[in-house]
Amino acid sequence: MTGLSGIILFIVSFYATINFFRLYSLGKRIFHFCLGTSAIFLAIIGVSSFLAIFFPVLDPVFIGEWSTIFSVSFLLTAAAALVRDFKPAFSKFPKSFTFFPLVLILVYPLIIETVVVKQWALALYQGSALLIGLLIYGFKSQNNSEYAYMLVGVFFFAVTYVLYWTPESVFTLPAYAWMLLTSCGILIITVGYNQVNNIEDRLLDQEQRKETWFV
View 1 (cartoon, helix red, strand yellow):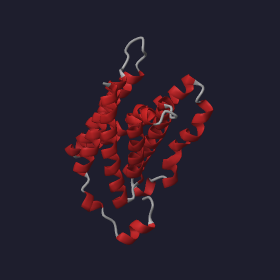
View 2 (view 1 turned 180 degrees about the vertical axis):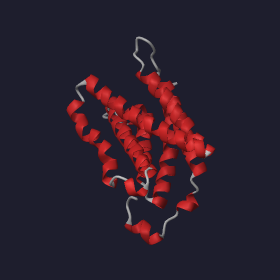
View 3 (view 1 turned 180 degrees about the horizontal axis):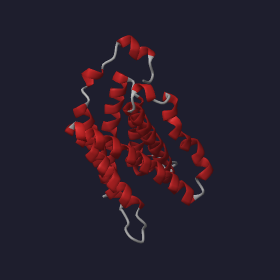
């Protein structure tokens, strides 16, 4: 069951990767780039156990752990970019600030041996991204019901988050369950995002796309 759920997570994440990088190629938004990058590492998590079969030298635990760190770091960076996009033009913080959550990737080797600290760091990053998503898409859903797609997707992530971090003495979430819940959240958000963001409306001038990495 875990193997099948891993394949499902890979397929859904790969679809999300293609979708958000396509959007990034059109609009050069940091938000799209970070979501696409986060989806790449979620796809790797999905097939990490299979990689060890074809490449015995690879450690699936090591791959899964570091893929989680990269995925969570880029997810919170996407959330920071979402906050920046949501703010009025005159109050937006510098684009470089949105990449601050990536500091976890550099710091992680220092805390990798401290189980409690690294778990708290992961929980904090995931919880922060979820809270931002719930607040912003909850607000947007009041003005445009189509944003409810993203809100439902974030809700799936929230349920997964609560169940995953519930103490094992109370409840244990099987690996296949969080993979399936995460896959549902990714799929709903990706499909829903396409519903409210007409790609043609986000086309930029060809020269601007060549000269600009991020907006």
